[in-house]
Length: 288
Ligand SMILES: C[S@@+](CC[C@H](N)C(=O)[O-])C[C@H]1O[C@@H](n2cnc3c(N)ncnc32)[C@H](O)[C@@H]1O
Image (cartoon, rainbow, N blue to C red):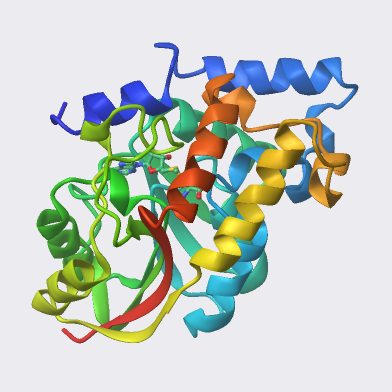
């Protein structure tokens, strides 16, 4: 086990048993009158789009991605697989969905099996140490993942190795803001400061340039993210009526993160408002 794996796993997986999260989700659904056959993207959205902006942030990135149908896509930090399934639905893509947290990978595999997603290969692995063939991927997709990875040089070397020349790196990431004071913690990606590895925009673009990635689209979407997070924090605290997704689904990120999620959500809102973090939507091209 690498040094990284332990703190990341400890943050995301609060029970040693990798099947525990999936059992918890199933029990919750059953209690609310749902069965396995009811699983669909609306029902799963509160737990399988674990990033600021939810599913619309994923469809926004897809809209600027330039991805072609039937692409070979590596998703790093795929969580419970909501985006992998979205890419499969929209593009008929062949997806390798990699996540370091065993409980997330197990739940993702169960959902894919039940829903019949045979073109998604969900693997529990470190995104920096992949066994994928060189030059095999048309794209790498990452949403709210690289801030958990301390050695970005190693990560980008691996991504450059597996991408085809002209392949895309698609990012929807939390990066450092101008305010360098300590983050309000916990946040969904870190319980402690040692688990958060936020690059600045300049550091990220420079490091990617060293690995021959050229920016095609780089947009800070922080204001939109703050609006979304504020609205969701208000809903989570019962200060606003449920939204469309929450009305359709009894699931909530509290099932994944525990009760601490309410504080995490409020802290993300505060960190965004204080310019300690920013949200980036970006497309890079690997130039070989
Ligand atoms: C905030 S979650 C986002 C999950 C997913 N991308 C989504 O948006 O729903 C970050 C994910 O990155 C995964 N992760 C962190 N470090 C990783 C690494 N080195 N390799 C693979 N996955 C990693 C975590 O296990 C977690 O599932």
